[in-house]
Length: 407
Ligand SMILES: Nc1ncnc2c1ncn2[C@@H]1O[C@H](COP(=O)(O)OP(=O)(O)OP(=O)(O)O)[C@@H](O)[C@H]1O
Ligand SMILES: [Mg+2]
Image (tube, protein in one colour):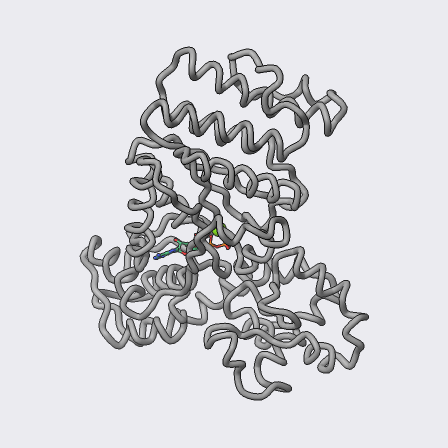
């Protein structure tokens, strides 16, 4: 069918033509916004899930909901080994601007924001960065507030002031942090302390984060009380009904339909993982000669979709691993396929293909300790995560199958 009218959208952070199966999270968030605006206690929200399940697009949808509610919003994408201070200034500046209401109160809070950003330069790059940093904030930097250089003190003061300002406007501020598992330990600690503080003061400011499944572990390692601050929403693959909506609704917009058998075939190949739903959907649409789309169309297009995923979704990640790390990944895939282990571990849940690190070592014929460097590097690169003590899993769905078939 006409590729120009192909509605499907595979790609990191690509807004899907239909955001299927997330009504529960969207509805819950509207309630959170309303409660926080009324000064009711609410925990900050974290979306956790594997690669490609739709955390980023859901985070963006929640941000839109906050904007619709009249809130000020800003977004940060965390990067490993990068301080959160400067990116946060940009995000919070945006939030203050969205709240509007120029005047004395706004200048004051922007001055604190500027001071917060400059304090990072002073401590980090011995003042040299100060000249090169252009926050675009005209207000003069405040003195003696959020500028100590200690991220925890500064962030508590900054978010308290911003929360107070938002309360004065009668609305709220929502800060969105993507890839939150990559936030450094000091910054995570500071964030938790600040969220704790504004929560106790009942100020209308919330943090909404998204990250890989081990994000809760990262947070509780930084602050033991973090579990009480956040509500975790597990973002998972779509069930069959939601996947059907994701495929059928965009096709209907273009006057096309899917046969029932075609949808069943799509669920079989994609497992309901949103990234795969979009990737296969796109390939099938281009290959199908006409509507309705049939199971045969899916069968014909599947190798093409798979080949594209092998390069773009899987291959790009595999290439980031060193030879030793690749051996480790392949051994994980073999163990997950049941080469060495017995039946699936009931405690970890059906969808969790976790394996014991001891089994991986056995598969490689090495001592577990000698494999720690490879394992730690893979954890840091976000390719694997620890599900519980002594067990690990791929962060990328279907990665084991890819490794067994293509490497
Ligand atoms: N609810 C949904 N319905 C249909 N398609 C979706 C849905 N959520 C996400 N997608 C699609 O899935 C793909 C991946 O989405 P997204 O980049 O948000 O995932 P992610 O969880 O942030 O992945 P990563 O961990 O790699 O950042 C995109 O192509 C997006 O359009
Ligand atoms: Mg993402």
